[in-house]
Length: 119
Image 1 (cartoon, helix red, strand yellow):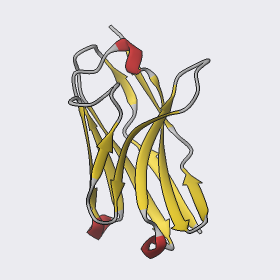
Image 2 (image 1 turned 180 degrees about the vertical axis):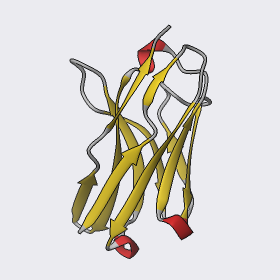
Image 3 (image 1 turned 120 degrees about the vertical axis):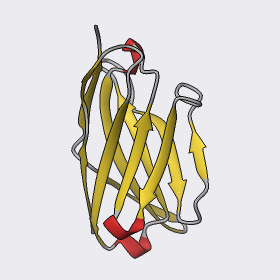
Image 4 (image 1 turned 180 degrees about the horizontal axis):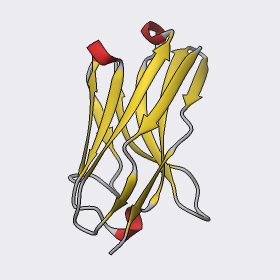
């Protein structure tokens, strides 16, 4: 089992920055991919960024160039640095961990952290 706890959300003005944190615990050695997703009211949850065990990153077009996913292995924490935030970035942001044992994929989710971009 893997437990994920997000933090760092809040209210920020347009153009501002936030760094979200995801503290992970449990059977972390089996996790293949860490990621951040978001869900705005009335919309489906969407992928923002992923980070593989090998260090490869991938970003959704919606935030490419405005966010960076990174990790601190010593702290078992994954971060999402977001810059130049826009009102349309307002959403609940979720941390995700994937354990891939072909053909199965196990998904673990945090409880989410609210990000509100407003003046």
